[in-house]
Image (cartoon, rainbow, N blue to C red):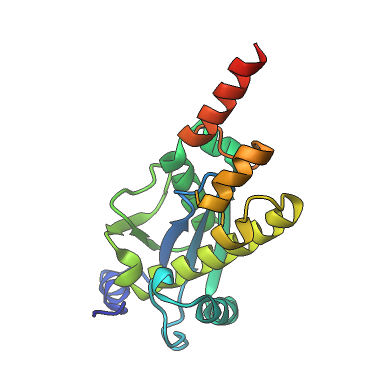
Length: 210
């Protein structure tokens, strides 16, 4: 099994791009909560051991790496809100979050390595896309960890306000517990109304009230 390395970053640096940011987002699939992106510029001399695609790490390992990355790397986290997801669409909203994350870095990046196959249209710097980048580039792996930990913690906070949906465990994804909560307690302000399951619930409720 291959692990992410620093080769994409080094190749960009050899082409004259000194500060290379890895960019990734998390939260396209959930029915609730924001989509969150992170941008990370790693210090080549202080790359934490064990960086990998966040999905391949335990929650405990992700938390430890998140805390380390905040200390040794330039990290920026940004979100696009549920309202923005519903106004645009989830892909566009995830790109908005990515652009915000890059803009929020304390150093201006020269180059972005972006997980996936699309460059956000408003990204005003040189970049390249890397499919499955979180498993191939250390900077993107770092961004995937930061975005996931931040979003998971955010969903735990929202779960305290809306305790019937299991968000502290499912992070807003459509699990059985989440679906049952929707059936019993309805839609919250944090649910994405443009997503079909939520849209259908609201549509049915509207028809019943007519």
